[in-house]
Image (cartoon, rainbow over all chains, first blue to last red; front, side, top):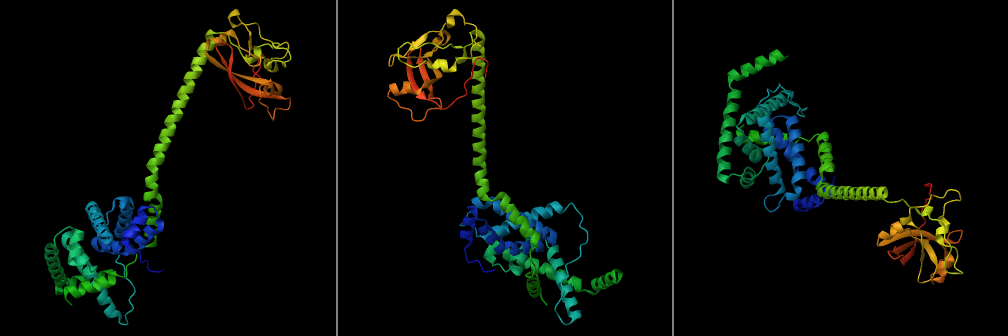
Length: 199
Length: 201
């Protein structure tokens, strides 16, 4: 599919006028970003799907009121995704989640042992990110994983840049602590025991 | 591996995530249902429907009121139809038969004579001197009244209004506004109407 070089503002204007193709181009451009953000924030692909759908439905409803000069479309979508995800997590707090199987993708590595180790590390890292309080988690996701700048992260979160820096630093520290705990011998022993039970 | 490197590895792994196709379908379906253009039109369309509904309700109410008034008046006054007006002879010599004769009921089906108040009398057109319609007295209370009659084409021709396409029998349907004094105020050609005789046929 050829890359759509139209600007966000142009696409938004056309979509607000009722052009389906313009909205489809917006969706095509940003759906993955929104989905990935929601998946990292929630830790659940199913929740991420719901959030992605809700974010773009919200965009459909708010297109006529969207003001491009106040925020870029990506920033706006991040903001909506953040609010929707937080609401969803707050609502789902009442429920106890069943253990869901983690999506394991087949690895192309030649060494199965290294691939398993890498996969386990990623799984631990995801768990560590997910265990962060949301104000740290969202900063880590936006800056470290999605690659936004400090200023962009601050704009999405409506906080000063200094706050972004401090939260990022604090979040990384917390992840490091968790990863160290996971690598400790006692934790590895528990993990090994569980693995044996599973097998 | 430090935290930043781990997070970069996580970002690389996360970049391969793809939105399931059913989400795409759901979002685009939501667009089709709620696109701004449709929503923009919806209130206007609703307003239009509401206005149309109000107008129709008003028209229905007005029609009902008129029907009630007509029914009430019909109960207090003698009922006359064009069908129970007997044909009259033309007043002016040489003028064709009066139009009322064209809508006279068949012989033997005449209605009994109306009360004296509704006595028939010929109305003579001052323009042609031709009696072309009869107006019962009961109808003379109204300042103006519309009468639908059939006239021979020749009567129009005398008025200087040739009719190119009369009916097969050479007659023309016309509507005449008759004043309180019995003088025709205006006349125009009418589209064909269903004539009702005394029996309602």
